[in-house]
Length: 205
Image (tube, rainbow, N blue to C red; front, side, top):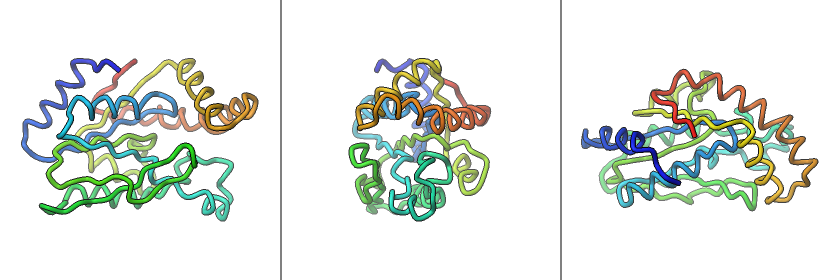
């Protein structure tokens, strides 16, 4: 994707401090958080690492144990405290230390531990996820660990079309995909939209 000049300029200004920068990108499901994060990583090649919040999804068997499989993707279906702890480690990473982070495999629909290696000399960490600006439970600590937070806004119809295509690509029928969007994705999107006032900048696509 083509990066808006202001996005690049804001990061250049943050990096001018010479200190590690943690940028957070928040948005609802299907808004393009991962795409934006990857475009930024390519723009700042060699100086950045992406860190998806989705790596902190609880495993499916744990969701089954808790009776939460039906609302996978809601705030309570993540290890939010683990995500906060990782951000704190990255804030105090020692020279020469490698911090390993989990990623999320959409084909498996499961988190995969130790998938992302973050070197101590990486100046820009780009983390993205739904609940970076949420003000409840451990999530409320995330905002204070970010140097800057962006909210990514996208037309709801476009988001829904992307979500429908994604769910069907990974095995759901159209009927099941539409039902999941209505019962899970969209209520989460409304909740996330209510946190946008905590962002430093809103990027509209």
